[in-house]
Image (cartoon, rainbow, N blue to C red):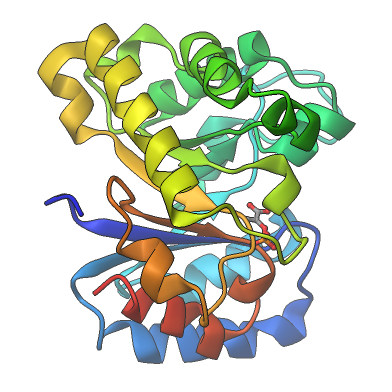
Length: 249
Ligand code: PEP
């Protein structure tokens, strides 16, 4: 356990229609009972404005699921960090494994998006994590250290930054690493960040993500070095999201 305030972020991915706003209302209602945990909801861009209106004045922050590195321009379909900030967002998820795999994002592109997030005043939630073949061949720590080195810009030493360790094989599969495996990777991340940023590394919150559910949240969230969770599927239902957050309290 660390002394840093824990944070639970919900990644809705490509899920959520206007009907889902009822879940956001329920999250807002429940959040005041968990003041010791920071909460973030990252809805799809289509309902982000409506979600942002509901979150206004609540303790729950709004986040985007990605951003473009440029401020504006001819980038059809893209959303800039400045646009997210203009909407009232305070966070943006970057380098999620689904984007690394399906959109071909690299450490270099993730680092430039993180720099854009800083430029716009957003806190990036930068995702790293190994694939199953990498885990099976004993490369986990090497992969994670490499992603940290490549995806995190130098400014992370002085700007609010969050890292999410998300083993690719645990995302949406119902499988989770052992608590010892989570602790091992989080310890390696602390060491790598401290080597690079010195004492400032202590300000970087380290989330675990990958099949976090109300049932496994109590043990995962109390694991050494874990400052909260990045939650996919279980963040779509207010009751589950709030139970996970309560496990951090
Ligand atoms: C995620 O997509 O970041 C994630 C952790 O998903 P899930 O909780 O559904 O595994």
